[in-house]
Length: 89
Image 1 (cartoon, rainbow, N blue to C red):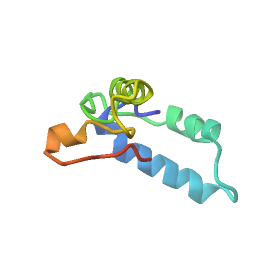
Image 2 (spheres, rainbow, N blue to C red):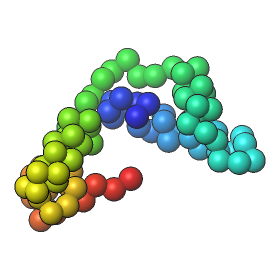
Image 3 (cartoon, rainbow, N blue to C red):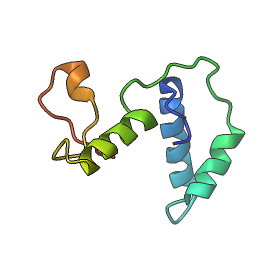
């Protein structure tokens, strides 16, 4: 993911994608979004995403493949006290 799990860049990334969608007739490719993203200035402050990151994704995939869980799940349940949170988006 282009913001590299830096929560300070999530809103900027949403705006970047919105601008790309508005600028092109067809939905822009990843390469075009990356090109626009790379030209923009990003936050110098790095606030890591403690839930939606590559390490948690790989852990969830491994647990699913080893049949330790019946669904791919982000660890949101542990952090928020929810019963179950599935990988989406």
